[in-house]
Image 1 (cartoon, rainbow, N blue to C red):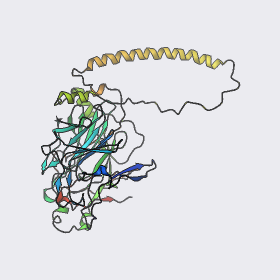
Image 2 (cartoon, helix red, strand yellow):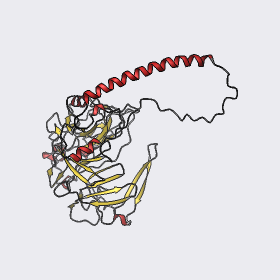
Image 3 (cartoon, rainbow, N blue to C red):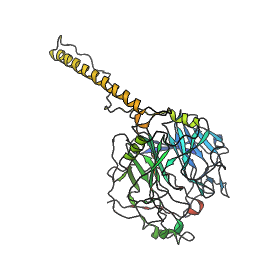
Image 4 (cartoon, rainbow, N blue to C red):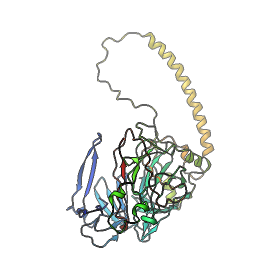
Amino acid sequence: MTGKVSGFGDAPKPLPLSLWSFKPDGTGSGSWNEEIATNDSRLNNLKRSDAAYVASGGNTALMLGGRVTEQTDPETINEYKLPGIVKFNMTTQEFTKSSATGFTASETGTDGQMHYVPSFGPDGVFLIMGGNDNDRLFDFENIWVYEAVANKFYNQTAGGNAPAGRIDFCLAGINSIEGSYEIFLYGGTNLHLGPDAVLYDEIYILTLPAFHWLKVDYPPQLPRGGHSCNAIGGSQIVSVGGFNANPDLYGDVLNSAIDKSVLDTSADPFTQGLGIFDLTTLTWADQYTANVSPYTQSGMVREYYRDNPPDGSQFSTTDLRDIFRTTHFTPVSNATPQPNTTSTSPPNPNPPSSNTGAIAGGVVGGVVGLAALAGIFFFLRRLQRSRQQHEPTNGIPHPNDHEPVHSSQELNIVQEAGGTEYKGAQLDGQEIHEMQHPPAEMEGENFYPEQRERIYEMEATPRS
């Protein structure tokens, strides 16, 4: 529903507003369906915007801010910022427009990211970070938390080593088996292309409920902006696509026709534009691994919670504190799922009258059962002592005191060039082995200010 038509070549006019859905078929394909047609009255007084903060989770999809241009709306001539927030109820398929009081002073913003966190609050919460308003970059020390049911914004301070203000970054998040939720942030740019461009090659972690930033230390070599990130199972996230803001490519072409032959010389170091990052080892992988174990905290996250309380940054209000006291971490079972035990076979018509093996098995089973009870008693005593040692004083559970949980959601990351800004460094064309099981490309939104139209997608490294 959001987005704009391409700014390259003879791009068509944007189509009238409508709402579409995509349903995967489980075999690597799927089908599109127009859920709400253009002439539906539910779309009255709504506008398609570009570079809005968008996310979905639970039963709600949100669109916050953004800008309306001739590339988003066929009836718009002069660009303008769109204030307020639009909510879509996925059950009733109804839209609700409301103000965004508690967000920015103008109740709008562009080019940032919104992320749904299901693990906290009665219905989960939406975190809003990054982006800009009137070319003023928002910092990452202040994060907006939005509770959709109450239609309320909170402003929360985040501690630690926060990223510099930026746009065009990606986020992905997931809950760990230790009971924390990590949001990974990767890449991004400043507000410029060409000689003034700053392209970041950094990964940061925002860990919840502590609201604490941690910076990942890895050799910078993969700067990019305008990409998307998604959690794809276990400790893996995938980075899809992106662009290169290299000043050597854009410095002489921003105000003239783009020489496609020049831009195509910048190949994406990621095979087919897909990069896999392991959230536990904090390293890039050369392939996707199926059927992996649930996500566990990396060493740096474990070390932080070992030395600090779960609410390292004190909550801005008691209401927000209470939201994060309500948790939804689902226990993980390590047992292999068993098929339905209901039997449709007829009973044995000639059951034996006695079975020596069964009797012996019963005796052995009784002994094993007693040993198991003793083991359970010993475990419960140790667990009780451990909890007494880690009992929080503020009512917020310590992440590492939780039961194991499913890794069900996305993570979000950003990384900077070894702690310094990347002044539009050119992408390295080094050979990277192709993934054995490349995941299907997922649609993402690239957010560009008006002056950033002339950008070509990086050519993918040829398949070997």
